[in-house]
Image 1 (cartoon, rainbow, N blue to C red):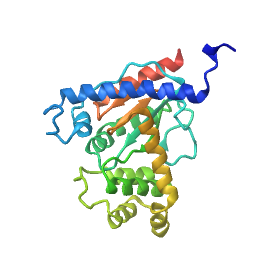
Image 2 (cartoon, one colour):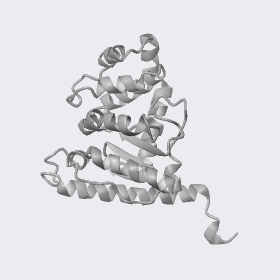
Image 3 (cartoon, rainbow, N blue to C red):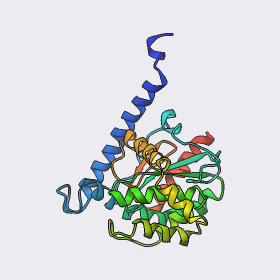
Image 4 (spheres, one colour):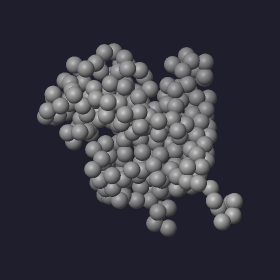
Length: 251
């Protein structure tokens, strides 16, 4: 075997992560430059400005085997929706306190569910990526706990059901328990225990480390069959990305 064909899988994955990190950073820089107030922090810093502008578009990168392999495709994953064998997988890195994640959840995700997930074209896999402090971390662990009772998406919809002030105390333990009740979580004692467990922390850390490995630094961020999209883009950006990915699979 020659040197050019003997790269280890881990080395290949590192090259993949490095490449997509450059892509994601480029999109974030472009969005920040176009955001009102520029990069001087008047709009809350680079992370918030990058997602606020909504002006970055999908990066036209060809599918990469390393990125495609990030799709877990676990039929029993409660933090995923859609067929495990769907031709297109969208991985979503989000924070429950992120206002632009909320906008995506309320405005775009329902359209994707109706237009693509229900038709078997698209699978959406959630990744917890808490970046706004302790309340974000607690909400992420609570989401994992709700998933243990197959109520993650109902809980997701309650948390994102309306715009919320960040770090306002709404996501303290009592608030999250009340939201779990609203979402139909049946065993609240188990929910409390799961939410504060080491397994919840480890699951959230796994997702966050995956995102950091890709160069994700703001939310929401997405991979559509390996193509990165940053921010709460208009719905048609996501529809175009899903359709292009599905066409590429059919070729």
